[in-house]
Image 1 (cartoon, helix red, strand yellow):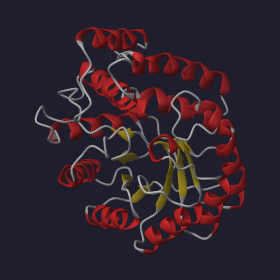
Image 2: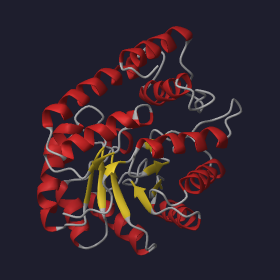
Image 3: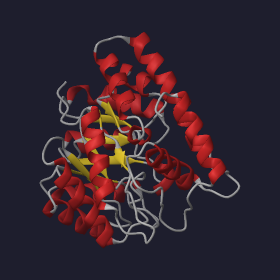
Image 4: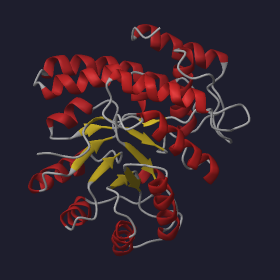
Length: 306
């Protein structure tokens, strides 16, 4: 197997100012922090990057800053996440002009669609660009599950070059990996922070963990242990990261949705670590309270990161 995209590819958060603008200086520091940790790529404008919350101008600015800061040292995957095909194609064209190395695309959402139309969507996006295309399977957000059969059909036809799987369907991911055995360049990337070791054992090419923003070194060590067949070491590292993932439970579910609890916790942790200047998030999300921030700090202390 020789997949194009492997290793740790964090879905990089988008640092913001108090006015909601992209904090370019913090974003540049974050890129440097991740690359120095040994990551294999950067995924800009995914769910952790607040893609759905940002204006087009802020999304353009984010890609531009990440591409320039990466400076060719690792590939930059740009999320082109939009409701319909024509809007996705427009984002793909912009990402290409800004220097992205690949694009990541979900199924259409908000609109009511048929599986045949989902397939037609991916084929149309691929026809509009020469960039590698990864399918993003995230039914919790777009309310459509990409079946293994569909992904493998698109891969066999050269439409998609891989998948970023955040579906929670580990059986389906395993079936996709198994079916892709005849497609050596296919990249099977898991988006699960807490089962990376298991997914690598199942044949994944790499991981796209949101928590990788906070502890990229840990995920790099984890995947290195997997690559060397040191599964006991991998499990121990995974257990430590699983405990650290408890930061997403810091924000009260009574007043914060899943995006706030995830993105808010990651940004709070990065601010505590001195990587970004502020834990500001896009409206209508909120920053973590003082008490919630202390919970995040305690998890960082336990993980040896403060």
